[in-house]
Amino acid sequence: MSNPVQPYNLVLRVAAKMLIPLILMFAFYVQFHGETGPGGGFQAGVIFAAAFILYALVFGMETARAVAPAPLLRVLASSGVLLYAGVGLASLLAGGNFLDYNVLAEDPIKGQHLGIFLVELGVGITVSSVMIIIFYAFAERGVRP
Amino acid sequence: MILLVFLSITVLAIIQLRDLFAVVMLFGIYSFLAAALFVTLDAVDVAFTEATVGAGIASFLMLGTLALTVRREKARPARALLPLLVVGVVGATLIYGTLDMPHFSDPQAPAHLNVAPHYLESTQDEIGIPNVVTAVLASYRGYDTLGEVIVIFTAGLGVLALLGYRKRGKKH
Image (cartoon, rainbow over all chains, first blue to last red; front, side, top):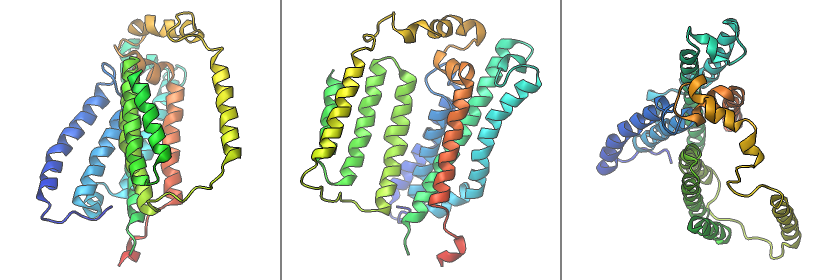
């Protein structure tokens, strides 16, 4: 499943090249528009990972690894959780309860906006990198010498 | 109603088929039907999640699993009376349990009387964002979402621990 597509498979390559930026844009839209429309960190992370998996399927695992090395993904996966928990700790330090965003800014509403934004960002980072990690793990096992 | 009929047909086909590749495809179709069902119930966020996770990533991961194992299902034992009995009893108990549940879209249902009115009425004042689902998910129920993120992170760790990465030097 991780065999690179042969060079003559031009249609697939061109189509993927056209699709991937759109999927990535849509992922960012869902991520940063989750407060006003449906969606949020979970969905955005999965869509982002799907775009990346498409890239890896069409252009091969080696190319994909060059774009997102596995160690980087592991750091990202944990930093998303840390960002989420860090927002909670920040609100603790600012004098509120754990994950109480009201104290993050002067205005409680602005604090809520900031908190939700950061928390959703953490969710998105963790979900997308964990999905790609799982994909890597499966794809690597698929290649049997 | 039509969606529910399609869901049942898909499930029956999944039970009948032996070719696991087709079963994975049908799982994807099942997820899309479920997503459409959630849309008709006005649960757009849940539908979105079902469509992306259930139909997208999950199908792909199951295909990856098929690539690691085999594509055909093993022949089933001819008689499966005990499993049938267990499934029947459990199913009957579950249906019996639903008799006590409030009717669909009953405004007096406990779920609509506890904290939901507060969320719906004061999200605009307290959080100030239009999507109440996001407000509940990320702010009111921030703890639970943190738990979910940790669950996903742990799932990634589990896959890494079980499947792991191939040592790069060993390849050649």
